[in-house]
Image (cartoon, rainbow, N blue to C red; front, side):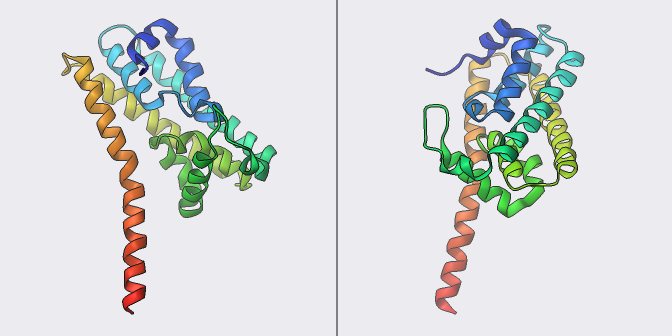
Length: 203
C-alpha cells in the first residue's frame, strides 16, 4: 500500500516535514521516505493555502543541509565497516554500493546531483564521508544541492498547484516521471559500457 503523502503532510505539519527530509537525506534508514514527493506535495498544498512558502523554504533547506551533514559524519566515523554490513529491513547495501559507483564517477558533484536521485540521495553524503572528502568542499556542495533541490521541488508543486484539479492523476504522472528519471542514467551508463565493449571487440 502506497503512502498518502498529502494526508501525511497535513497530519505531521511543519515539524514532521522537517524530520522526514532530515531522515531521508541523512539517515541510512530513511531511504524509503518520500523526499521528492513530499516537497512537491508541500508546494502544491502551499499554493492551496495549507502552508506558507516563506516558512517551508528555509525550514526544509535547513533539514536537507543538516541531514547531509549527519550522513557525512556517519560515513566519516564508520568508513569501510558500512560496506561489510549485512542487509536488513532498513538497510540495503546495494543502495550504498550504487552511491559509491556514482561518487567514483562524479566526485564531489555527486552531493549536488544525488539530491535529484532517489536512494542515491540518502547514501551519497555517507559515501563522501567514508571517502574522506574535504569537509569545506562537501559543505559547499551540500548547500548548493540542498538549495537547488528544495527550491525546485517546492516551486514545481506550487506552480502545478494552479493547474491540477485531480491530485491522484497528478501524482500518478509524477511517479511515472520519477521512475523514468531514475532509470535513464543507469540505462545510459549501461548502453555506453556495451558500446565501448563492442568497439573493443571490433578493433
